[in-house]
Amino acid sequence: MKVQRIHEIESYVKRQGAASLNELCEAFDVSKNTIRRDTNYLIKKGLFEKVYGGVVLKEDNLVSFENRQIKNQEEKRLIGKEAAKLIEEDDLIYVDSGTTTKYLMEFVPPDMSFTVVTNNLDVINTAAQLENIQLLVVGSKYKRKTRSFIEMQNHQILQNFNINKAFMAATGLTLQNGLTNSDMLETQIKKVICEKASQIYVMVDASKFGHSTLLTYAQLDEIDAIISGGAISKEYLSYFKQQNIDLHTAY
Image (cartoon, rainbow, N blue to C red; front, top):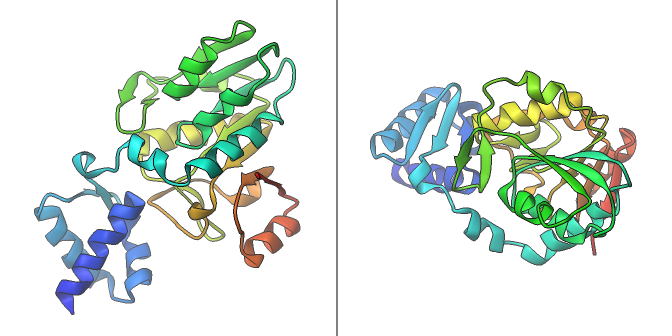
């Protein structure tokens, strides 16, 4: 029983990238002491790293950007296409790191003028080819696994940008924990952006619903719209309606 549970915990954290101890207690219906023993065993095996309140998958074991990109690729492209419709002339937008947000710039009209702030390498490469776009890059350290720039020595720089639309990604989305992510440095940037942006659009494929990872960067009642594809449960649809969160369906 113990061996099976440890194997299941390993699989769970590998899927999510990270997990809090409370989350694992709830998922496996065991005490926190039991979870601590199990995760300590996996830490000693070199699979996880201990962080405050939980564990994260070691960098060497993270699923690469390329492999994550393959999953639900067509849905992600359609989400990018739908999100591009929300950009208007002279907007100042932020585009988050992620395997879904990377598609946004592919569908922007080439003659539209606006400003892009981003830490997403693929967005940078695409935007750099569009003459009418002003491009601002944030982040001082490149993270190869997510093809994004992380670590801000001075978050005041982000506070200076009057961002009117933020296009955000999430590793998980739940009613209880909101929008979650596994990387602490990425989460710091996401939090500042969500506090500053006038409108927050969340680009997530259907697989992200009902999953929660280590760190919350925003609660759902803080966002303005969800852009997604595929089936969404009635529980989420009801919540979005109650909170006046627009739902843009990509198809």
